[in-house]
Length: 323
Ligand code: NAD
Ligand code: LMR
Image (cartoon, rainbow, N blue to C red; front, top):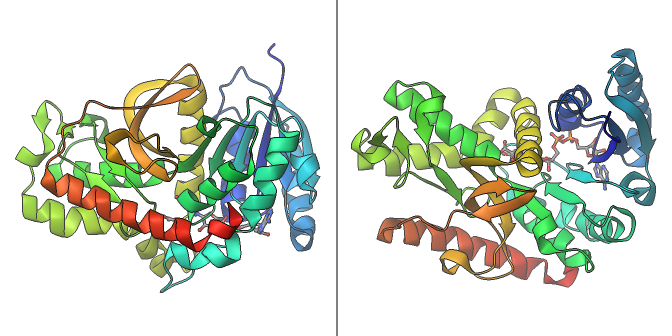
């Protein structure tokens, strides 16, 4: 049997935490041969609720679950962590943009970035889910001075999945047939779900849908899907977000040659400003996220990629005191 790996989840008593922990403990994230220890962080007012979640985890008698730590102390929660899912943050309500949360949530990621730096495994992989995810990830990276920026990423697989599902529905195929789609930029209303390189079966996607549908319906629908769910449910996506976070960590650790989308620290590829956390089309191999550098882009793509880059630069300016 393998040695257990330590997985930290922050905001563990929240909606996404509740939809995620049981699946991680059952082996869906790291495999059904990989024992895990869950290290759950909450703020003091949520510790009672967290104790209830811990009881339910015990009551599942998961064979792979080798321990559960529940704490409100970051140093304890991040201690020796191999994987960290930074979920704990306020969600937006109706009528808000995700960047409206920067003031409330940004500071969380300075302290947690430092604590990860000081207490987690030196090989830790960190995924930021709490919104605005790209810029919170930027804050965490910049506060984890001894770690490699490649150890941090932010979540846009949910947007990627939304885009695949929408295109599959429109073209009347199973989602497996949609390949090579990409979500660029910010997890926000400016994100750019790109179809230029996407295919459906063996056919280029843009031969199956009109450019007007792509520009006027597909892109806005993907951009606004989070808000649409908030309007319908009264609270933000949870099960689909938890699913995406598990998928992101699984692909990152176990590898994939299929293109997906992840927010990572830009090294200047595709001419995107270095240092910002920007979603790129990626594959994963040997525990590393690799940008797909082979895409051709037209003027429409470049314009949309710049727009979302500009928003990320504005967000960075708004929190520069936290970097
Ligand atoms: P929630 O309010 O149900 O849960 C958040 C939890 O975080 C709460 O239990 C709260 O006590 C805890 N928390 C707050 N501050 C904390 C801190 N400093 N340390 C540890 N825990 C803390 O919210 P949710 O629905 O679970 O969403 C969590 C975050 O994820 C929100 O910011 C939401 O907008 C974001 N989100 C992102 C995506 C994405 O695609 N990137 C998708 C869905 C939701
Ligand atoms: C989502 O995309 O569902 C999340 O980011 C929640 C939100 O605020 O839209």
